[in-house]
Length: 287
Length: 326
Image (tube, rainbow over all chains, first blue to last red; front, top):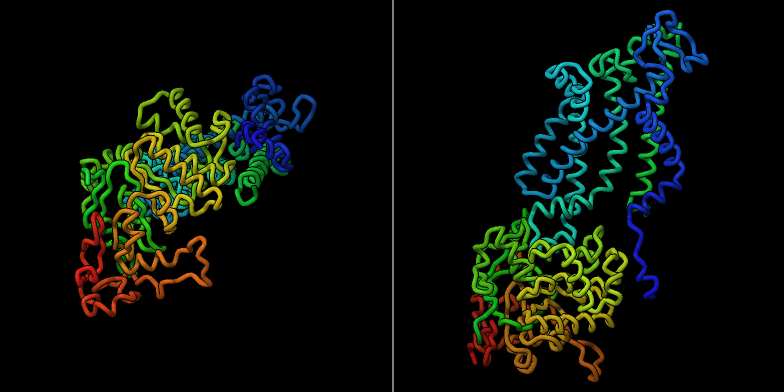
């Protein structure tokens, strides 16, 4: 008995990674995400052309050996633009999630595990945010700050705060009633320490699961804003912005629309697959 | 009696809910000497746990301490601010709970759970606290402590988890340990070990112990003094010898008679008829009167006047009008 007990247990992270590694949709989603990450990291080395180089002689040329995915309406290489576009995609994912999850988690934690007054105030604020249609909220933020990629990301981030705040609040409400929270309090841990040292670590699983589902939606929303001209501005090789001009040539040069469209589709699919796998792996009811 | 370590007077903790005010603890007086082991007994729902939580001011809304004084080690617990309370908990008083496995944070290795308060309260370095944690695990009888310190709570048995809880609660050498039914969720064979360990560790550290339990046998084995709770009040308090030999309150007598005695074969255990009163209704006289066998002999007074503490012997009191009549 002591032999098996004495062995140091594997960490939870290692266990999660191991289960993910053998999960079918994690494999596919992870592969897609890995391609995006590698493209973003080594875009200069992978891209066959300069993504901004205009070549008016080769406008809207179909896919070929030189231009793998063809060129757009001013002769820029679409493959290279997609590869550099991965950087925009990742940045959008990161910034929107950091804003939404960061603010939402802090608000939800204070609301769910903090004083009752804070709960009342924060939840009314969240109710106000929820009462606005998200698109109206986002457009209002953009109207104030002016259209740019940063504004679009901030706006989408703010629009997603209420979802996180609600989720974290309900998770915190459950965890704070656990006996180990009471035990921590009986040991003289301060309220802040209990909120961030005991409650927060114990709600990381639902947070990760929710993020995996909210992040692709946020990325999609930011791409949509760029398509509407409210996000990334041309000539930036952002996938949503790339669709804007290309759509006029839908019937003559389908590749100019298909390339960024499919890139968005694949990237979102990858995130969703990975998110599904995380949900399977982290759901305590399934463990 | 020497200068008490803990002195409680008129403590009342009420829960204000939409359906009325629940008087979970309603006027408790309690004294505890340094190093004393006090058994706090009573049936489920009589306010034992709420009293234990109140002593550390851990009662959460809708519960609230509405009246009373708690003096601990010369300071007024009711007047403490958050900072003083944080010092009191852990250093002054420790607490262990009924469900040891859910009282440990599931995500933190047990060694770190022990060293955390050592770093926070005693100002130890990480390395020193880690060494101390292993020593503490050894002191509570965890085999291969060095390796076990790396375990997560779900890898422990209930008995081991309770040993770890004892190690944590006593890590800062508090002057008082409150154990809220520490063995209720454990196997019978493990119960005795945990109780022996509790007693041994408290004696070694000179820590007083309040043992909350509904098992009167445990009290006989372990405690110096007994406080019997009924419907939010301490109805009888005295030394173990006095209370087991000459229980003065009819409720205590009933409790003792309802416990099985080894060797004395009886076909049925005696039970106290009836249920505890509804604590959300005001009680005019003695809360036990409706179930009391002695009431007929005393008469009207039981229904109208709440009994006051009356002496029943040396260091022995009971709240029963029968003592006034005698």
